[in-house]
Length: 155
Image (cartoon, rainbow, N blue to C red; front, side, top):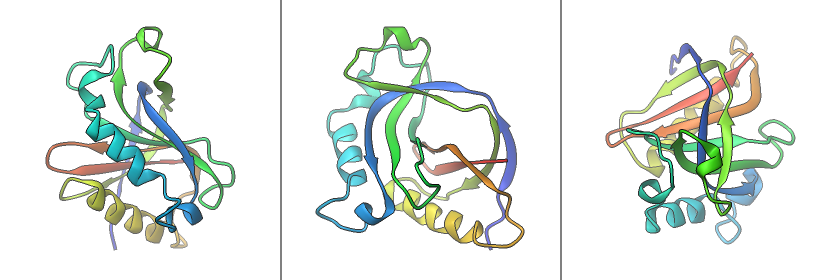
């Protein structure tokens, strides 16, 4: 069983492109939004072209606006940290990574498949009786050159 670390995180502003989806939609290849989101983000090299990118920012995958916890619709933003959201053009979505308590799940490799593998471990972890309660405010992935790390908001 994976053993996550508990960590207090500060808020950050992230800008990028966003989709609205749910678990059922993502299981249907013709309706899935996440693969298309990341394909567009990578193909258009948005990590390098979003204005006002914070120096050294990794790429973020941010999960917010949950309708019904893990079962309803939610929004996902692929983006980078920015220093001043007022400098970000309207074609990009912006949001705040909520400050608070998170459980941190470390991956050992990079890429979308690595992120999905970690999410599978996260879902399994939160099925256990002693898991803390999720906030369903902000969860996010940090994509670095050699690994993906997941931060899951908890109460």
